[in-house]
Length: 477
RNA sequence: GCACGAGUGGCAGAGUAGCUAUGCAACGGACUGCAGAUCCGUGUACCCGGGUGCAAAUCCCGGCUCGUGCUCCA
Image 1: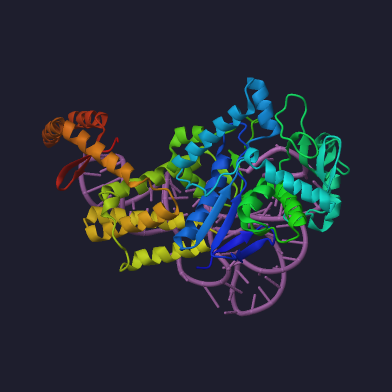
Image 2: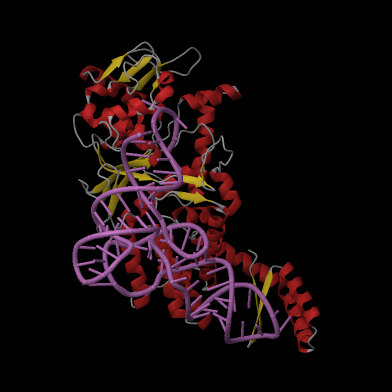
């Protein structure tokens, strides 16, 4: 297997390389100061897709993603509600974890938290101070970027000068004790009433960037194979991590591969709280369902910006329903069979595999999935059970296992059981109505016939008139 | 200003040199009393201008437009 993955640092697709017998992956997770939004979902799904694809290809992974469970924003939120900061962070982490489960995002191997990593954060800071890369100021400990200027712009191509000129007025409030505004905080001394931890420099809390460097070191050592997160983290967060980790450990590269997912816009505008166009994950799941949301979010490759709008959701809803409907129609996941001998399905597999190997192109994978759904629908109506079973097998493997957009077999079992029991409970009524309608139709009493059709629809029964008579199905499950 | 990315049919969105992307919508057809679901079929698509090639949406140069970032950010 040769997965070519876009690497932000070298700005090209590169075959993934790794040392050891497993690929180590670290993704920067959420800061749980408010409910998570669909951008967080996209990030999680992007890395879930990576892990799934590697595992599907028999490559072992160790995937770690963190919770930044202490931050200025969390402290602010806690103050506002008058509660302990842990109440804020725990609440949002719990909700996030629940959403991830609904979205079929597989569990990471570890979810380290900043508040549980203080010791290793401090020991990294100590090392950086000892080595002369960091200095202690009045309000905290800072990393001095002039000690490693060559690392500037590793991901974004920016130079020291650019940032100096571009940062403008915001510089002033980012740390009073800095020698240079491009320096960044490793440790912030606590103000009265703020949560804090002891350190050799004074009580305080970690800066934003150092935590990830420390957690990567805790789990993977000096280097990690693939590191990433949202593309908005390239600068300054990930560049700061490169400074810290490489200076601290004296080994580079810190990450062999940098992977960044694209942002989500809402109706063409950047998603932001001030615009009031924020979709939280739970809102989106309530609106369209978790797997439809996942479908919508992998319908574009992970690096592409997504414009989140009604058309996108309608599309996703329709196509996802077609996928699930076709599998139900075929008799559910238990009918799955191998597709080995089928040329069309083998060809679809080939295209999907080569798309996924080319920087995880889930859009191509979705396109192939839709093609197979069409083949399945054709097989279903032709009564070609062997072909339909092969299609179900294919879909379970790729749309299910790889893309994660098919619910588990319990879902189908429940739905089908629910449907069966519903059907048997209304069977007599439906049969009577259809008989009545047939009589109406035979006398060309169309008004009466349509009236009965509406009654049936009210029961959740849809009918189709075929040459073999009227067929019906219960579809409102 | 600087950096990064993008410009494909009505819409969304693949495709990095020659062969149907795919889906939605539209239109025509099968089935139907009519619909619905499903299936079959149809459509001058590649921002502009140069260049290289037998051949360019795809490579090169120039331009235009848009998006994002520049220490809150997935």
